[in-house]
Length: 375
Image 1 (cartoon, rainbow, N blue to C red):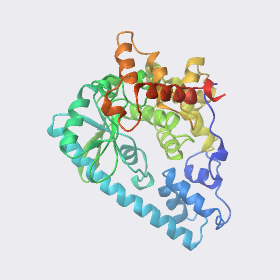
Image 2 (spheres, one colour):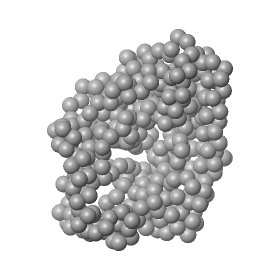
Image 3 (cartoon, one colour):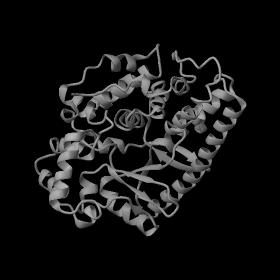
Image 4 (spheres, rainbow, N blue to C red):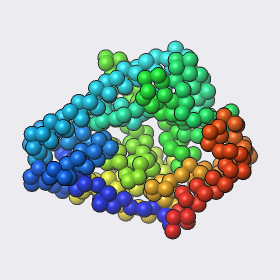
């Protein structure tokens, strides 16, 4: 079993129209009258979950999305609350970047913060609830130490020393303020993360400003590929906010450059899946060159299987770890296996009673998360 398509029925129909609001060529239509009182709480909750409160607020304000006065006030309040959080997060981001600069660690701002400022006509249209920062693999240990001295704590210990730097996507840390900082060395767990060209990611990047301060994100081609990774391999069901990121950049990226970059990474299947899902779920009926290619693209059986690891509610780290093992160089396999099968006690504390119980848990997770185990 390979990649599963995310059905339109996973979303309120009105929310699909919100996700496509003002996209050229989209045929998603708003309801003719305000959503009923029974359906409204679910729609508003889904708008929060899919990072759609900004677009929903804009559509209601413009009169495109019919809403009662109370519904309009609820959306405005939800969006204002999120924007207050965004302001706090951006202030914290500058503090984090200062900490890293003080330790002579170069960083790139990822995902919500960068995409909102660089790829949307108004940053307020793109909501986010946490921070994402990329550092070089060789700087991971120093970065964690710099953040630890500032009060950040990891949510999960490292399996064994060196695992973060050599194998993992990154880690999540929390400061006393309580938000989450996702520290990345690559884009995603599993074999797709191993295919990311980490040297190519560290090109000149693209600058933008927060509070009058210049910060640096990935360059547009790398940012688009990262958006595709996040859209195709992130949440399940697919997050509409992530698809909208792809749609915003799809209008301005160079199709030839994207395809060459994706081919050099071996990531054509990821880009094609993300773009095809964006076109399908957002109802874009006048796709461009890259979208035409994506819709017609046929992945290899192996790539189809790797995509299938992410297109399920039962996705597991264990299944992705097994798939990763197959693409590691032979010299790295022993260290990788040892870290996962016999991790340090700090990693298993409060999670597994013994090595045997951990091994049994891993087997169950692999069966649950693998494509064959979901048949």
